[in-house]
Length: 191
Image (cartoon, rainbow, N blue to C red):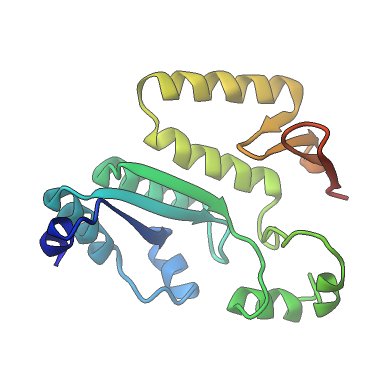
């Protein structure tokens, strides 16, 4: 099928892998197994189609072992690009039902204009950001790796994290303020 897709003009496929931790995949009811993911990337490369692995950190059951397994997957499969997101709590999901049941959020949250919250029920945001960085660093090569090292050093010294769309200011493990880029256009308090 991939060869036919390539002939038809398909040049890129983004696979929603989420995690390579088997326990995490079962917990989020992904319905896939690690072997299937490895084959999908192998066959996509063989067909000449660009591959993107879309990954998440912070699903329920996520731990350092599942992050390490995902890093090993990145090294083994070498997807052309990766995208890493921190798991957000959205209505209608099993995660949403679980955090409501535990009392971390209620339906009243959505009466405000706050963005969807990250899932920090099992791990602090700082840990989730470190895991996100770990996955990105595993994929980085050459100048990208050097620039990431410099960025992480700067962030560690200043307590400021700069992402594609946001500047986050930390005090210890707590996100204190978040600004939307470009600077000065909108201020969103994380408190």
